[in-house]
Image (cartoon, rainbow, N blue to C red; front, top):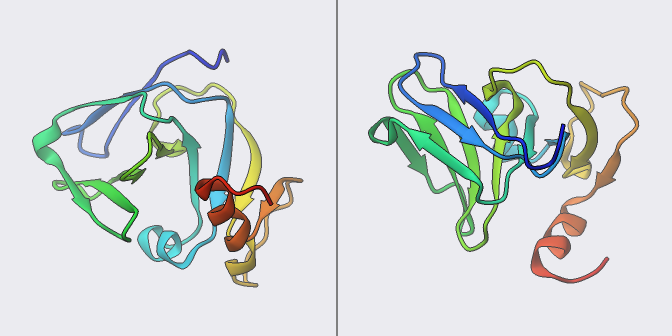
Length: 142
């Protein structure tokens, strides 16, 4: 897939449709406690920067889950639509949102130091701790 190829999807009930252009075919898993509470397990998502548009915006509710980010969901069916940084052009879209069946590559796990011991992925990925993730987004090299 070209990094400039748009993908479409919709929530469970169809009230919200999404068009997004992922940065790449790579996706990651977030093991932070907020993502695990939000979805019952790690968030599997693809980064789309700010190249995301929605139809059915009146059906989107956001929740400020931290000082720097918010999560969006369909207020009709509850489908998780995005994780978004408030001050940067960054959307993480759950890969299950997309309609197509084009392949994805699982390449990264973040908050790996917060992952509980009761599950594990067999894929070989880049693994970042909480400190490494915050350093990456603050512009510090680590």
